[in-house]
Length: 260
Ligand code: NAD
Image 1: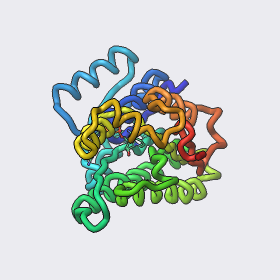
Image 2: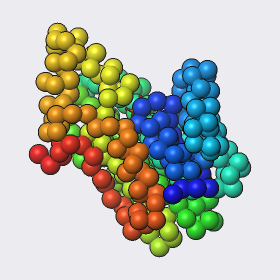
Image 3: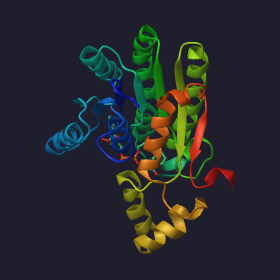
Image 4: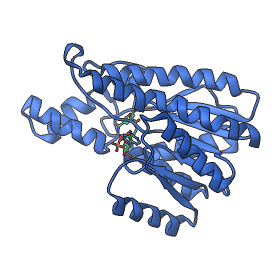
């Protein structure tokens, strides 16, 4: 379905980003992987995608808190493939603390990585998409882009900002065969959430399985985690021809969380 396309997926060495990158590669898109991690493990992930899906896979270690590195990452993909057809802004981090105790450097880092990087990467990619007359931007926001939880001030602020930016960019590109949408997942069991399970287990003094059912999934009416493959399938749909009139949307994949 995406044969010959090229996709940049930020924060794709792990979790949701990796799952989305693999879903796009399965449909034939070349992939630029980005994110941190052990270089041997990243090499293994790249090799596995090349072998399994027969696409080209590049890697950029660009830090999503550094605008110059973000633009260089997009240019790397453009040099290799002539354009960037698909941009998935997914990189994100979390920090949990009440506002009076929230460290300033964590606030700045979360705003930079989870929100401002979406602007910087899109700014670099839009001229390439315009030149080609086709483009798809998918921003991985969160249920926390629509509703709040205590102790996640920077994260909730950044994700609400991503939804605002998504709407603006959708309007600016509406006539150009370029779409820009946000996916708002509920809880997905990735390393980011796994760490929260451990932290909450310590705070509440209860075992991990009780943290998952009584704390983490309490707000998710389905009572189960969202699968990474579900987010990959939705991203592929948004990038397909059938998705061409969906733009400026915030698509919840949260087991009913934000319906409550
Ligand atoms: P994860 O920790 O498994 O993966 C995060 C990825 O981002 C990794 O590849 C990491 O190396 C990369 N990354 C972190 N800081 C970076 C930086 N400065 N520059 C470049 N890459 C960086 O997390 P995840 O759960 O897969 O989260 C991915 C996205 O999905 C995030 O934006 C997160 O907010 C969002 N999200 C996650 C959940 C969930 O329940 N897991 C729910 C809603 C939204």
